[in-house]
Every structure is written in C-alpha cells, then in structure tokens.
Amino acid sequence: MPQSTAVIEVLKRDLKARGITYAEVARAVGLSEVSVKRLFSRGGFTLERIDQICAAAGIEFTDLTRDFDRERHLIARLTEPQEREIVDDPKLFLVAVCALNLLAYEDILAVYDLQPAELVALLLRLDKMGIIELLPNNRFKLRIARTFAWIPDGPIQTAFRNHAHDFFDSRFAADNELMILLNGRLSRASVVALLEKLRRVAREFSAQHMEDAVLPAVERPPLSLLLACRPWHPQFMRALVRRKEAELPTRRIRR
Image (cartoon, rainbow, N blue to C red):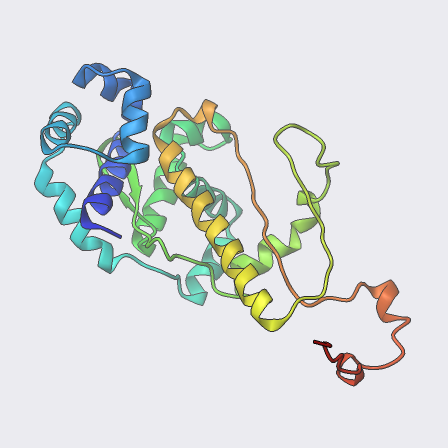
C-alpha cells in the first residue's frame, strides 16, 4: 500500500475515534459532504487539504505519520487464552464485536443494556489486550492490523460457528440480503483462482466497512458476510456414492 494511502487510512480512523463525521469535516473545510466522501474514497488529497482537515479535527500531522509507523506493530492475532477470555464473558464478547464494528462508546450505550462504568471497564480490558487504544472521553481506536484474523478453529471461530444457525434463519429475500449456493467440479488451478477472488471480496468488504466508519451508527445497520468454499458432498449424495472419487476414470480430451 502506498504511504500516502496509509496516512489517509490513519486519518479516517482518527476522525472516527474523535467522533467527527464527514459532514463536520465538510463544514470545516468549506466543501460539500459529497466532495469530502469522494476525497476519502478516491484519494487526491493535497497537503494543504490534509492540513485543513487536521486543523479542524485537532489532529497533528505528525500524529498521522507516527500512527502510520505504528501500523507495523499492530496485532494480527490474539492468543488462545485471550480469545477464551472474550468468549467466556458475553458482555466482553459483545463489546469486542462492537469495537471491531467501529461503534462509538455512545452508540454502544444507546443500543445495548450496559452501564457507563461497566462499559468503560470492558473497554479497558480490550485496551489491555491490545485490541483498542482507549482515548480521553471514552473514545477509542482499533489497534489491529489489516491482516487481523481469529485463530482458525479457535475459541472465537468456534463460538460463531455454534451460533451459525441464527445466520441462516432467514429467507434471504429482502433488498439487503442475498444467498447463492452453487455446486460444481473445478480443477485445482480453478479452485486457487476462485479462492483468491473470494479473498478479494472480503478485503473490499473490510475496506468499505472502514470507509463508512465516519458515518453515524444509525446509517450503518449491522451486516454480516459469510464466504465459504470447501470440497463437500451433501449427505444424501454421499450415501449413494459407489466408489471413491480417486477411482473415477481420467477423461482424455480429444484434439
């Protein structure tokens, strides 16, 4: 990622941590909100414009570059005991997910049945784990790398898998819903290519999630994206398999 792009990403996160919206930035620098959104989406910032935004938000430009340097030290994965600690405390689990969803302190209190002091204590625990950095006035920013992921088959993934039936408790017929189930047979090379495309979709989802973080929470309803791909024979088909896949004859392509 170009350094200029990384600095803008840090600026977006700092604006979010301070509760500053695109609309407020627009008023401060004399642009329309649409223009500000376009700048953050497509780039094209001048140094003068960045200085204007930093001044309006009370951010030092050196803070942006310092945070950019710290990117290399962000956590990419928790330890198994840390994941277990989160899973074992439903309220901590809730606040951890809220933090990853970029909900502000006030938003969490407005949506969930938590007391202010209780929420601060939970945020302090996440700060100690390194997931967030708690700032004055109960603001916080994420301290996780862009490559952050839960431990494969670890406590968090297991917990989400145990609740997966809730995800599928829908007809997936609403305007903001979609489910596509495809079955086919692909070569190894085609599978590799397909998996990379799915990873690209996941990266785009994550980037859009960060892009929309400066919008008010009411304009960002929760949305879950599940991407899954694996060799799989449904049970009703496995029951009728006559011989192993490896025993299937190789078809020669006639030229």
